[in-house]
Length: 253
Image (tube, rainbow, N blue to C red):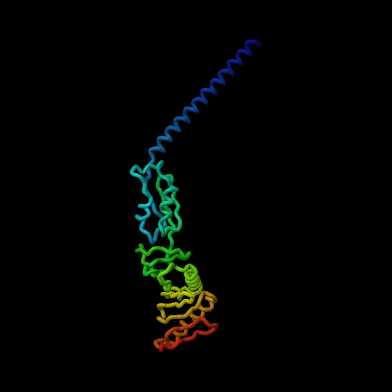
């Protein structure tokens, strides 16, 4: 019995020592891997910078805002700070910056898309669908946009601007062909609008943005009638669609 007990104690001791050795080896391997990973992380550099989503803006404009340091070390890249810098560009609606597994830095851009030109205080501006006034600039693609006029030299009236944009949006949804020929909306101080189309160089008194769907339908029907009948409008000063179920033509003096 004594010998059996001693043998069992020796076997138990060997097992404990074996477990201890395996544990120590595992710890050493973990430390080695951690050190190697740390060194690899410290030596990582940005392989390339990609700008995605630009159409109006030059990619170099965005790259200038990224501002990577000379070493291009991945550990020094602050994606949140890059996003803050790029988001300050007036034509950037949203931005997302992320690093890929291949150490490529990607800047994903959503641009603000101008839908109209605006003249205010003798200067030209762009306006997007949200009513955001953007500085005029040369763009990578040619923009053929309708003009919003009548704002004078004071501050842009946001209420009148919203009325004009609402009318444009409805026109685009209701009659895309007519929308494409829209050249100008002259919106007066009281909110009354006059529309101009390239298809027919005839001012159309539109009024405010109430019942705009019905007014747009009357304009479309009038344009179609003029086209089909080959009517001459040279003695007409303007057309008026502000009244229900009728288009009134006002003769020139």
